[in-house]
Image 1 (cartoon, rainbow, N blue to C red):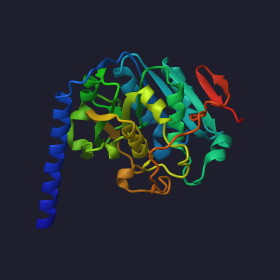
Image 2: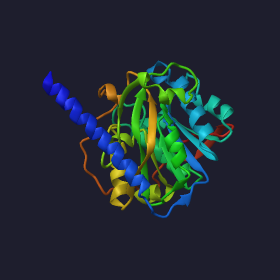
Image 3: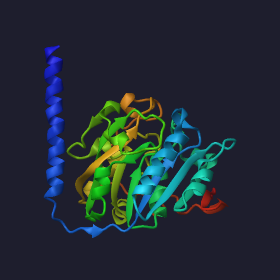
Image 4: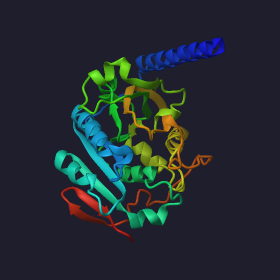
Length: 305
């Protein structure tokens, strides 16, 4: 019991130190900043209502993020669409005039999938978003994540040669539209932790950097076709290999659900024992050689070659 209390106390002060460190680093960052006039927000999902309320969580976080980041465009990639179920792209395109949706059908997913337990190849999908982004700054954020007010205060001036991340806070969600209360009520916090020294464990939910950095990195490694866990950190390692600095802008908030990796690994996460830095994808990474068929207003479906 005493050992547990000591361990908790050490961990507590370590977390406080990390938050203080990142805060001081941001305050002492005098590097040249660029005005951020617009942001491409990339989100990936599937029309399988993952976790029982995926569409509702997605709508809730998009409402918040798109309304609080001015001049943003949404790029939504619906991966491995289930043919006999309604597409989330339909209501997304209707609800958000700044949205572009790209559907990856089952037949294309099957060409690449090497893990039958992983119906969404998240990072191949995010590569599509990178190649389709029309703005200079790319924010990749998960469908169940909304951005904290501290991030919004710090997002207007950014350094091109920096990869930005956020501290992690997972909350119990009441199913209602998001307000400042959802960030302030400490009773709703399930778990929280600061961004670690090299950002690693937080960049799957939120990573923001200049588009040119992802183009130099050639996106996430497209050879990783049987794994989801760890690919986020691997992409960050590629950016750091290219010489990028790291910085933390504040906190992101995750709408807790049982399938989250914080509740344990499952078969959809795959194996992630790989060391491949630096990697280089082929010139057509991000599926840019796949023709597009327009199937709705600002909705396109990738076609087999």
